[in-house]
Amino acid sequence: MTGDEGVTVSEAAVRCALATLEVTELPARLAAAAAADPEVSAIAAGRAEPAGDWPAELPRLVVVRVGEDLLRTMAPGSRFRYATAPVAPVQPIGPDWLGAHAAVVLGAVRAAARLRAWDLSAALATAVWPVAPADTGLDWARAVAKWGAEAAVAARDRRAFVRLLAAGAAWFADRGDFLTAEAFGVRELAARERLGDPAGLADVLTRRGHVYRRWGRLHRAMDCYRRLLVVEQGREDPLGTARALALFGTVLLDARRTAPALAHLERAVGVFAGLGRPVEHARALVALGTALWRDDNPRLARRRLSEALALLVDHDERGAAEVRALLADPDRLLG
Image 1 (cartoon, rainbow, N blue to C red):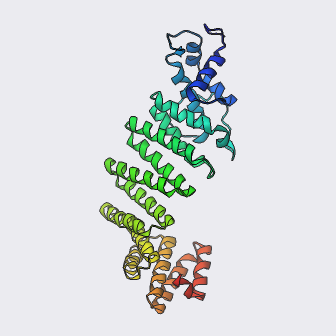
Image 2: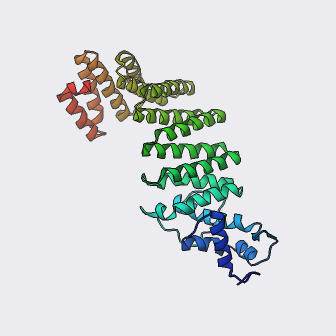
Image 3: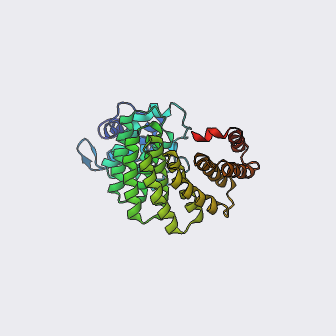
């Protein structure tokens, strides 16, 4: 089938896809996605009013079809607003997949944002992070994040926005780009506050605290965990409160602030005692035993470590072995 310009439908659609996505090459499966849709075929065949070099709707349609195919590949089983039948079998992602498709993925995120398919752009940008290898270029990653975030803001979809920010922050932190991860976390925290989402607020504060600890910025981690404790107490969530107390106490211990660490870890152990969470309870006991040993209270420290061991023997053999090693050589607790 040919259009008015004498090119086949697939050629017209693929030429449009290349121009709109700003790429020089399109993998065969994605070219098929661009060409096979009946609506794309009708417009490419000339049955639409032209606008410049291409009919007005053709760029948006081919970007949507290519974007859908990429989305199914990166996030199989997910549900999005754009949901047509796949045009070809979706192959699992291998270690080299993103390297071969990086330019097209960025092009689809950017083009969908420019063509007002905002939810598709944001969904694509969010789906990138779980499949992007650690050696993916930072410039590419930041461009994907920029266009996806702009699309989520334009769509006025705060939940899509926070999903994108959370996934991106985790990837940048794992890559060691703590500055970008922090910027994402600051924006996510503000968005969660506007949503009035206490559970989401607790989640982002927990993740931000972990990033700061890995970064070595313990005072910032303390700020996050201190606020996390306030949020969890406000939610009246005993498990969340116990976890926040343990996190706060542990980072205080990392910062060699033994006295306040003891106070928070003792409270954490007390709350965990009634929750039926033996492994988490045991970890809090180990942290408390560490604080007690550093506070020159070896008898009570050993008792807390023994209590932790008793909890772990039936639930976490590796953890139990670590506690046995500490009981055999408790000076390791001095760090």
